[in-house]
Length: 249
Ligand code: CTP
Ligand code: MG
Image (cartoon, rainbow, N blue to C red; front, side):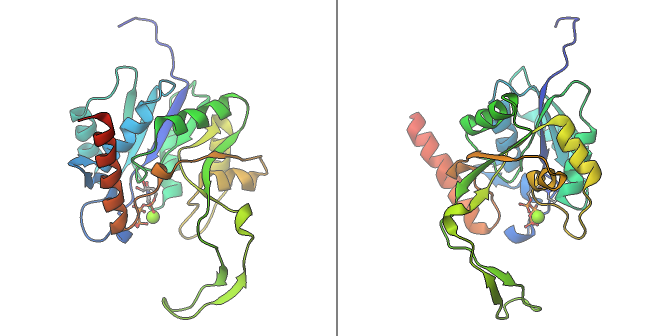
């Protein structure tokens, strides 16, 4: 190891502190396994696959930081990638903020990536980083939506009929994914300035929009889908099986 310490410049914050209520009973979502490996490990590897990423900050379930640290120690990462584990908060927004606070000096580009999107390809990660390095302050990978989307007045009790308020033109809509990429200071400023009640922000780029800063979309990838409900576990394992078959194992 050289004595000269060069600070890493691109870091990824991985919020992984959610419970995964929609996935049903079981371990916290990020610790559930896909083909025997915890989803979080797949997600960390997906980020570390990018040569530009030198630090990964994992935001662990509040009482699970030690367990997550052990998991990361037990699974090999590339030599060039450092990692840190910090305990998370009650909302995703809070967890991301706690991850940002753990970043060392000298980071200029920050990615935020859901642990629940374990299979994003490295080309998508690199495209986001490149767009930030080319000067965008906030970059979001996204796909056109397949379904027509209606805006409604949400029913008071779940399952009740809901009044439709609007039908946005589908061709103008995009479903956003992660990793989202940011100029470091812009994202930290957004998290310091924007306070949302209740669930908090589920989308970091949305917070930057509220600052009035420009946000751009780049093409996302169908394999960057979020594991949310039980059927998504089936899809994720099918994607892994297809990759293994294509790799010739
Ligand atoms: N997350 C987090 N801290 C929270 C809530 C969510 O770090 N307090 C993370 C999740 O671990 C996940 C990402 O934010 O990687 C996206 O959130 P989501 O898919 O909603 O995951 P959960 O909140 O775990 O799932 P659910 O909403 O079904 O409980
Ligand atoms: Mg959630």
